Length: 117
Image (cartoon, rainbow, N blue to C red):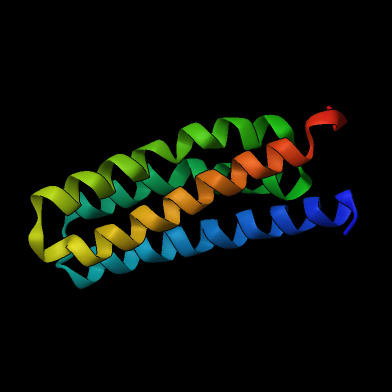
């Protein structure tokens, strides 16, 4: 498989994983009792992902680099909820796994495109 094909697949995987992460977060908060605080949490966590989406689709390496930092709040919220809230452990674990997969995919994309900067 050529390097361009790997890059295209990594880019597609990142965008799909962002969609899954946003959907999992919204489903988690809605199915476990939605409140105003949950709406604020969803906005705060998803806004950087949505802002970055157009540049991710165009393959901007810097956006992929700072997106690794934008995934961190998802990891923190999911770990905190998994430990502190037994009722939300399954959803927290799902979000944690998806956020970790997104982080790995972002790093993979950066490695695949290392020489193209």
